[in-house]
Image 1 (cartoon, rainbow, N blue to C red):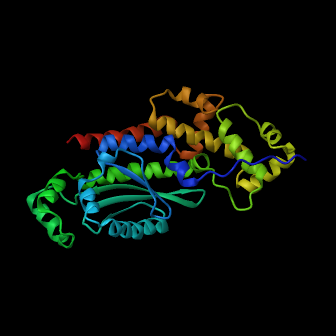
Image 2 (cartoon, rainbow, N blue to C red):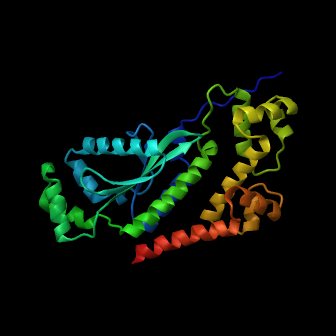
Image 3 (cartoon, rainbow, N blue to C red):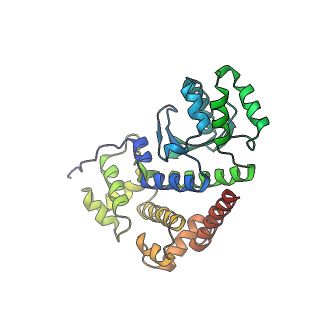
Length: 308
């Protein structure tokens, strides 16, 4: 039996930060909320600013310019670890008294990075708030004039708007978790090369009318053996894995585009609208149309508050 050649492993973190899905999301979020998002490696140190650097809080820039970067890193590591341990997003006040939203991103059960959105003022900008900020950070010896300029230019979001923002981040993190196999193709320990290659082939061709026999032939295995081993190695059978990829792609298109539902169904590899609706409802407990309406309401709600 011919052994298939496996492709080299991808860098998980690099795959995520270079993903078009990730960059498009943070750009849209930045446009709506007027903030920047950063993606940190799971080591909680290395980072990639995947949105406009100009959106970074001016207070953060001022604090970093005064040599307090290490303190920021320590604060981040502590809370990033907490979020990863709890496996859900958290909001906290940093050492400088600014609000930050963080959400851990997992793929196939592995913590691959952390999304960070902030820093926000904890209350509407005011003279009283500015004096409180100065007092809280007197140890930094910030220049009052520079600090005042940065403070009144820093972003602020009211509580409900922060909740909506966190909701969007949570939705996106869930999407990234579901799309993990496509974003960075993490490989299970000891997984045979044939099934690593099979997964990648399916991920490249799931929009097409592919069959189990076609994939088995691609990796040099008999259909019967491939069918039996695929479920044991991957954790789900071939049909389930294929449908999962198609539904995940459909979710992204429903949330990010205005394409007709029927067009999305065929673009994701389904043979018809009925089949698509049935599969979508089985996995997400709602129809594609209901899912799109929910996402649209959330986006409009956040955008409306941003204009206030």
